[in-house]
Each structure stands twice: as C-alpha cells, then as structure tokens.
Amino acid sequence: MFTGIVAGKGRLLAKRSVGGGLAFDLEAGFDLSYPEEGESIAVNGVCLTAYNIHGRKFSVDVSPESLSRTTLGGIGVGGNVNMERALQLSDRLGGHIVSGHVDCVATVRDRRPEGAYTLFSFTFPREFSRYVIEKGSVTIDGVSLTVNSCSSETFDVSIIPHTLQVTTLGSLKRGHKVNIEVDIIGKYVEKMLLPGDSGASEGDSGTGINPAFLAENGFV
Image (cartoon, one colour):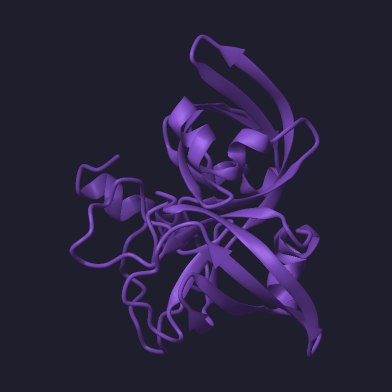
C-alpha cells in the first residue's frame, strides 16, 4: 500500500527479457534506509517487488500483465521514473490510499501554465470515468493528485512547482502516456452496490449494502 507521495526519482540502469516479462535494474535517487529483500516499491505507480538490493540499486521483475496495462515496457535505459516505498503504519497519509495496481493508461492532451502552477489535461478510457470525480483523487505515474474537473473521457489536474521538480511529471508533453490508478474506494463501493452476484454464499439472504439500504438508513 502506498500514498502517492513520491519519495524521489530513480533511473533505469538496465532491462532484459525474462520469462515473457522484463527484469529492470534500477537506482533510487534517495537513500533506501533499512531495505528488505522482497519489499514493495512503486515505480511510476506500479507496485513491484525489489530484490538484489545493494545500497540504492535494486532489481524488479515486470510481469506480462503489468507490461500490458502500464507504460513500463516503453521506458528506455537511462530513463527516469517516480519511486515510492510502501507505506508504514507510522507514516503520514499525505496523499490517498494507493494500491500500486494500475487501472489504465492515459494520454497528455494539453499542458499550459497558469500563474505558478501547470495545468494538465488527460484523455483516458471512458469505462474508468465513473471512478474519477471532481475534487477526488487520482494517481498519475505514482503521484497522488486532485482532479480539478472531468468529463466522460478527460480530466484536468493542477500541479505545483515542487511536484514538477521532484517527479517525472515535469517532463510530460502533449502525447505522452502515463499510468493511471483511480481511487480504490470508489471501486469497492460500486462492487457492493451492483445488482446481481455480489459474492454472497449460498443461503445468504442477500441483505446488505444496496441503494434501498442506504435510503432506509438516511445515507441517500
């Protein structure tokens, strides 16, 4: 589990094909204090397992599933990536709850300055639009951001200078692809409210959280 508050940028040192996927050798741009073999590190928002950790350098495996759903396969040797280590229970939750399981890829539609800020507009698959709401949270290449506005196929975010400096978002241009993770809470709520099979066991009365229950108890 992560927060979307990127610890810093890292660099891809090498990549090679392994068993239908890829293996990356990476170097973090910050100290990995008390590293543990097998710990989770988010790379451009993708939760990966670190091994062969030596100082700031480590390796990860990228499965075919991750390659098909993210932009990781397109990163070239020498390219920069955003990195975040897994959340500790004692940490501040400065962003929002991020799983590191990317939902889709979005494309930079526009980038423009507005005072000290930079406004980005993205296009993304329509089927994920129901999870993106105005003033809600979205993760872009591992960075937790607030949605300014959205439609069925686009959303906008405003990014402060500090975020542009310490993450790879500062290098984004029109047409660039990014990894998107929508707010996980919305997906769970939707699952509970959907009619039909909700995973209840045989003999279950079917009573649970649904629109009728919410209305009856004053939530809607």
